[in-house]
Image (cartoon, rainbow, N blue to C red):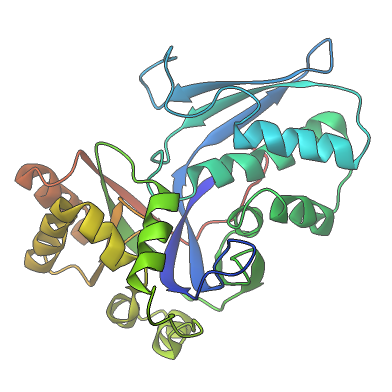
Length: 298
């Protein structure tokens, strides 16, 4: 299940329901979690979490109970199709936790696909997307994958023409940043003057359609970036390294704290990753590329 990045993230004023209207361009990249669903003898739905190659951790920084979004996804699918069976979910985490790359939403999308196959519900893609929309704003896109526009609170997804492949480096922080805290800071920033209705930059869509990586880099935007940098000012050092390394664009990913750098190609991506590590400005630097398909069986 791929991670999500936002090439553009426009955020409107807070709605009465607590959500913000978004105008965003999503891209799925090949930094992936894996979710495995196994039969059980009862109707329980449980989850275990493994982190990369580190083995099973006793104290996981993600919920391992009914609050886990993958568990919620399985239960929502079961309720929708009146399934009586249970499942044991195993998640192998690679996507940074609380890193602005929708790792929990990716696991939820993967759980829907895995449990649909396990239980033989025969859900259509439209039915899965409807369930996904009730789980979180990013979950429908992570079923969809590729490159897409997101509207509403992010759950309204439509494909975007994107040619070629884009190479990224993700500067991973040593601890996460609360999405709720970032949005609260954004609301405070606009307490006196509400933000305008969000729009996706036309220049970004043009660059994606032509496969112009330089144009994409110049058009990257994120309305939440200023707040994320105020909360974590040390992230600014990553932008300095990106400028020295001739990154085509550098942007906070979603609500942060992961910072993404666009490279010319795979070799340039490797050079940027090495610079970030040697400068000590992040806990890890991970190379990835996109677009990638959404949640699917392997």
